[in-house]
Length: 309
Image 1: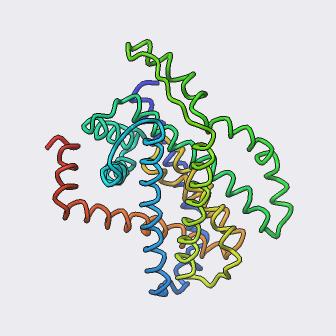
Image 2: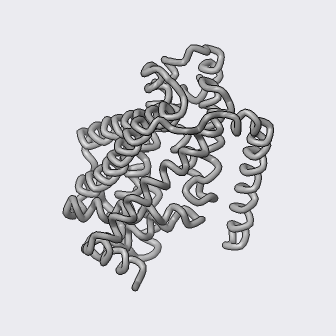
Image 3: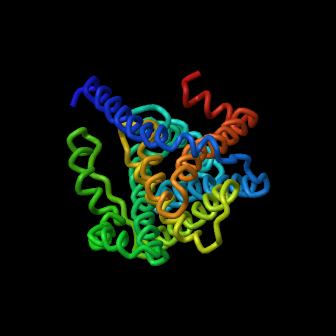
């Protein structure tokens, strides 16, 4: 597929998503505009604090993966590289965040093959863990008919565990590396490492779900009982957007799935409003991170180096 065709496809997919999402908003607009969207400030601030911790957990997770496969880097430096690279997600194509991280790792003396593998594994573990969290959250759903419709997905879930180990990736990556004269890559990840990473990212999604619960709680009253349900919904919708290579930062994909699943538990107008506001919630925290980067001399220098300034 040529670059032009990819661009046309990405625009087409985004327009389709916006169209259908827009139809739902248009149908429910009267209820949305009539709802009191004044947030409960304490709940909102608490959600922002926990979400910031979630970003730090993501940075720690990638740095941990890199260490496990032999990429020695300072923990603070690893945090800097990860948090700086997340802004590449907003560029259509889905690769700029990866390329930026690989480039910054190269400046730290880490081979491209090793940093690329760390990113591949760091993406695989959250995706599989999100599936597990979502499957577990179904135990708390009261509508058994919906759960029954998702059983085929749950049956396929165990097959995803094979992708937690580097060997399936190496069987694909090594022939490509060899063809370009980079040689085969030999990376071993012990069973203990696999277990540690799996449970770490399970905990990561639970914390993210708690942050999301408090965010919704700022606009709509929900009992604590909904935390496991929201953790599953947030994990699976965020992962769907994460896997969307055709839209910047999963724009549209995540919102569509999040609205659909949330509307099963809260009024549809509220689900739409919360979904739209949650994008601003995420962007707001990332803007705080970017501001810290611009204020700090070390991170500001790193950003200039990455941009070639």
